[in-house]
View 1: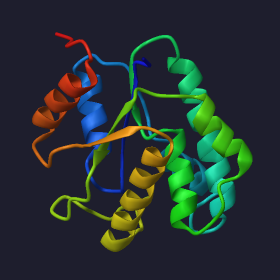
View 2: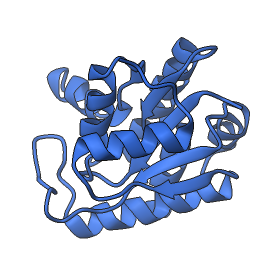
View 3: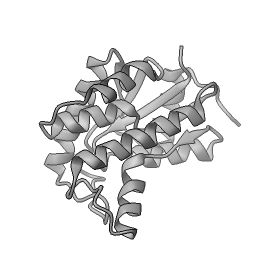
View 4: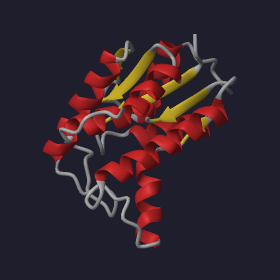
Length: 180
């Protein structure tokens, strides 16, 4: 079984905070593609932005996630989103999933359990990269969770709990070795 664990969910649900906490505990992690791509594209006046060219944005996310997968292959790592998230994102937009993205989702597999952070209105905030409404974040969550299930993953819902409790839950449920 793969030791590459995905944390997924809609925007603003505490995924990156959880992954950062796991990194601080000593676990290897891979960062989210979307936020970094948005930051880079804004810095260079690029068009691969979800509000400008969602298809190009999805292609860059796929490329980022394939690179992250290869960087972590053969070891343990916790990913802030994975390849299947891009398929879910396109589905949420009502766009078809291109065959190469479908093939990537079937070829590059993660741990059988994927951990989904549910929408959490009490912590949801907008920022420079997160422009979605809470409703859009909820629709994103639904589409991504459905995509992971369709690709054969067991989706485990993370508890709405303090980050240390969420981390302990994920470590136990994924069978990760505790790091001290």
